[in-house]
Amino acid sequence: MTELSTGRQAIIEASPEPITIDTARTAVIVVDMQNDFGSKGGMFDRAGVDIAPIQKVVEPISRVLESARRAGMKIIYLKMGFRPDLSDAGPADSPNRLKHSRLRYGDAMRAPDGTDGRILIRDTWNTEIVDGLKPQSGDIILYKTRFSGFYQTGLDNILKTLNARYLVVTGCTTSVCVESTVRDAMFRDYSCLLLEDCMAEPIGNVGNNSARSNHEASLLVIQALFGWVSRSDEFIGALERRAARTSASRA
Image (cartoon, rainbow, N blue to C red; front, side):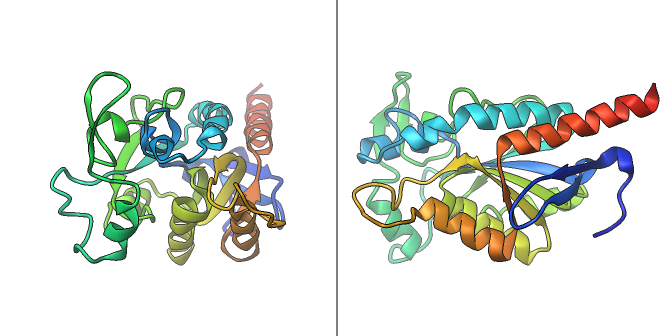
C-alpha cells in the first residue's frame, strides 16, 4: 500500500484485517437504494418481496453519507434503470430481460406520489432514490442496466478522474448488485470496504432453513477474496478520529 499523508489516513477495523484508507482518494458508493427496491409500492413490494431489510439500512447509510461528506469524500449513487424503449435491456432472449420480466420491468403503474410510474424505467418515481437518502448538490448519480455498476457505464472513468483508490460500498442487494459491482471493482484494482449494516439482501432470507443467508455468504466470500467488511460505526469512528488528529495538529 502506498504511503499516505498522516492527516489523510483513516484506519478502519474490518475483516479479515484493518484497512487504512486515504480519505482524499475514497468514494462512497450507494447501490440501488431506489423506490423500486426499497419503498412501498415499488417493484419489490409489488412482487411480494419483504423490503423491511432494505428500509432498515437507510438510517445507517444516511449517517455514513453525512460523515463521508464532512470528510470531503465524493458520493456516487448507482441506480438500476432502463430507457423507456428498453433498448438497453438486451436482446429479447437475453438473461437480463428474461430474469427481470418476472418482476414486470417496464410495466406502467400509478406511483404512490400520484405520478405515472414504470417499473425500472429511468426518470420515473420508480428509479428515484428512497426518502432519507436523497442526493445532495455535488453528488454523482449514474444509471446502470446490469447488476454491476461498471458494465457499460462511466463509473470507472469517473473514479479515475476523482483519483479514487478506495471504495466504501453500501446498498442493495448484497449478493446481486453489490457483489457484482465489488467484483468488477476488484478486477480494476480498487480496494473495496463493505459496511455490512448498510446493505440488505431479500434473497435467501425468507422461507428457508439454511444456516447462512445470501447476505452473509456474500460478505464471507468478499472478505476472503475481494475486499474488506466492516460496519458503519467503525467507519464513522475512524473518520472522527482522523478529524480529531487533524484538528490537534493544527492547534
